[in-house]
Image (cartoon, rainbow, N blue to C red; front, side):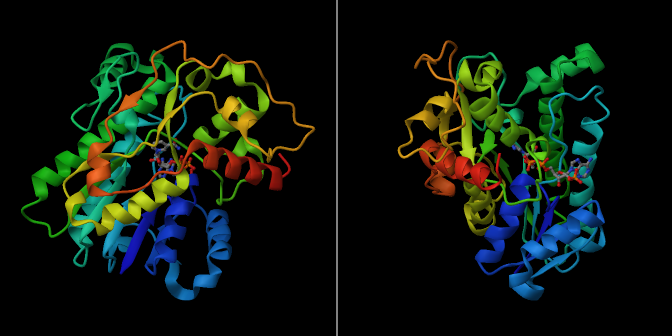
Length: 327
Ligand code: NDP
């Protein structure tokens, strides 16, 4: 089978491409520029003609599945237009192409986010029944002055809503179905093209800064325990979401649990994968001062059955990756 992966050069997507290739799928990736294309061609050249590139609408032709990962992810957007339009239109346009040219298509897997599920500050166990109406309210009321993270969360919520809406409206005319994955913060080693820590994607950069630069400034990981998943498990979940029949028509939270204090997790590793000259901040208390974010992950366990990597494994492999890059 052949899978189309949109935004194939991203942190998550490059792992998604690799997992599909490892499992024997052929992959067609889409990217936005030629230099990004070159890195991917080099990375996956051992798979011969099983990896190729394409652009919408043509890209959808002949593929059996789509993993739609492309979407802008940064938390400091100045305007709503930067994020909402690209996130929503990017999703709807690939689904439109799928409806038009996806004669061989069986399933579309959309990389949504726990940002479409969680309402920040609400203390409850969130499940797939929850939608982040709070972020939508915030951008409606505050417009461009809404906080950057709210803009991003609203973009993911609106994009996922648009995906379900499109699917519900067209499902009697199409042969494929939709499956949506909702990961929380994604961390782990990088295999995409990153030459400096500044070029890391938003979540991996925050993890890097929290652990190796200045833990204190990163509230979301040091004060309020945030949920996490290893990027390799996100990639694996895309394969499973495509292969498991029961994933069709479902949104699925994929979370390994609370990642509270990665600095402590790094310090606890023995032997430490961190070079001795890198001083880690020490002395954080071992209790979260706010309620950690909680997700009900029973649906994912039932349908995908993935065993998540632990934060120890994630921490060890990520630090080893950074060490290898001289960071
Ligand atoms: P990256 O920034 O590494 O990748 C984002 C990808 O989306 C890149 O290929 C990028 O292309 C593409 N993209 C960005 N803006 C646009 C646009 N306007 N039009 C078309 N393509 C665009 O991020 P991640 O790998 O972390 O994120 C991938 C997906 O996972 C996103 O949908 C994100 O919302 C979701 N996600 C990420 C989480 C995380 O913690 N990392 C958590 C939950 C969900 P280019 O390089 O050309 O800009």
